[in-house]
Amino acid sequence: MDLQARLTDFAMNGAEWVMWLLVALSIIGFAIATERAIALVRTRDHVGALGVDMMRLLRRGDLEAAKARLARSPSFEARIVGAGLGRSDAGPEAVEEMMVGAAQLAKLQMEKRLTFLGTLGANAPFVGLLGTVIGIVRAFALLDQSAGKVTSGLMSEVGEALVATAIGILVALPAVAFFNAFQRVIKARLARADALGRELLAQLHTAS
Image 1 (tube, rainbow, N blue to C red):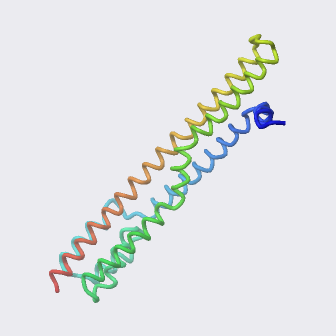
Image 2 (cartoon, rainbow, N blue to C red):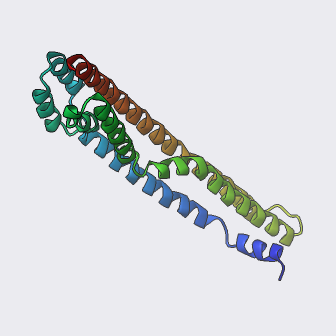
């Protein structure tokens, strides 16, 4: 049996498995999006309070109070600036290096499992298209068996094939939306941490 015949036999099994695959992927994607949303909410400070408090304490030169404020915060911004502030006795250069390293680790933690959402958003339409292609192949096979006669069963096969693409697009759209939203939040948090870090460095340079 040649390759074309094998592929045709495979297509004759239908594209229903593709739709179930897309449903499973969408459930996994929603679970990841929910987990990431909860994680990011739990690791944020209240309405910019950290930034306001830190700016005030750093401008007063009260590094001990700043350390205590950072220790109370569950946010990634606090972790980044706290890593640098913990080495304030080693000089501004050491503080900056510590914050750069902490920012990279924080970015990795915040982006945990987001690759799946990006991959799902980019490839779900192609998975749906695979289902459509399988359905069209099956429809043409049935058309050949019916000697070119268009039947209701044939039209049903074509409709099922198109549904696969529609499901792929429906799965991709929220995945892309979630991925972009999370990336925007992560970028904003890293920017806030960078602003606080620069304020800390400015204070250390002034004091030295």
